[in-house]
Amino acid sequence: MKFKTGVVVNGVVIVQGKERHAALCQVILDAAKEFDRESQRKYGIEAVITSGIEGTHKENSKHYQGEAVDLRSREYTEEQAVYLMTWIKNRFPSCDVVDERETASHIHIEYDPK
Ligand SMILES: [Zn+2]
Image (cartoon, rainbow, N blue to C red; front, top):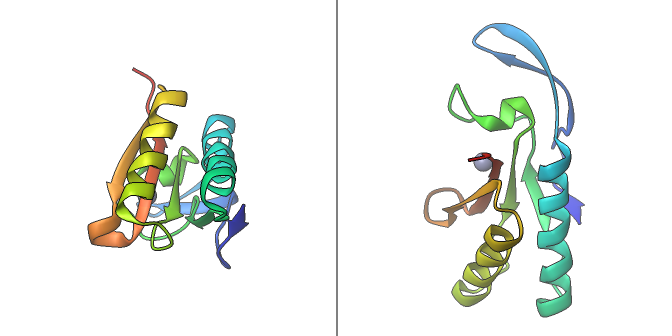
């Protein structure tokens, strides 16, 4: 698994003018690792995390709490992306997988226990 330059996994983020410490939570790291593992096993493609706790997201984004990552989607065909999103949804029922390929060229995974 690779990280795009500039991705922050542990640090201080400013949200609504306030400093907040955040670190990617274990379930999100596990989900990203599993995405990468299956991507490499099935397609020979190493996954790339394009956003962790940093970046420009909506104010209440789970990224700023360390509970979301974005994974680059442009390497995958439609079929491959759908397969991998379904794979993660099935293995991590506490996570939501959001298809943001149309608007942002990535797949967003966030921790959202029901
Ligand atoms: Zn995201």
